[in-house]
Image (tube, rainbow, N blue to C red):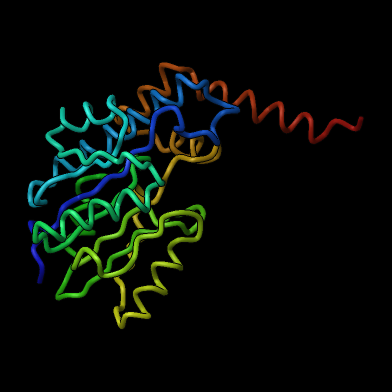
Length: 235
């Protein structure tokens, strides 16, 4: 079996100005940026509690997020082209392969309920090469984390319905992937309903504390009440 110490964690992080645009109806630009930073901190906290990992890499061109990453002891790769999370992860994968790293665990920066135990479960699922482990997004069957051994076992393609693309890519290469449906990693926060589910779950995360300070739960309840009222308005 592959020890998780052979795995590097890779976290792609968007520019803060582009953070969580689908939450624009609920959160102000400053709040979206604050949430993005808090979620990255939550993910880095979980990764830091998995000592068997070889290390963590954050791929970003955002100076504030690079500073956050370094404060958690993570390595930073500058994503100067900023062509999205897939290109960012593949940039790290190429660098890791050139350095002789055996495997990679790519995890999104917007899964604040991720825990060290879940991350350990993903890494422990790795076996003899080549190996692929997938954690699907519970809401839209995207992929929220993928572990690869070697680092180029399959191409990375995060996004809507990407779980099926990763599954097909693995099967095309003769790899039967390990699929882990995990509550924490499975919840990525992109839409208002994701935000509501995250707040309803309750947690001691930085993200939950930040949203509490912003009064977002009350705002969501008001928005839902307004939507229901409009739906029943006969005019």
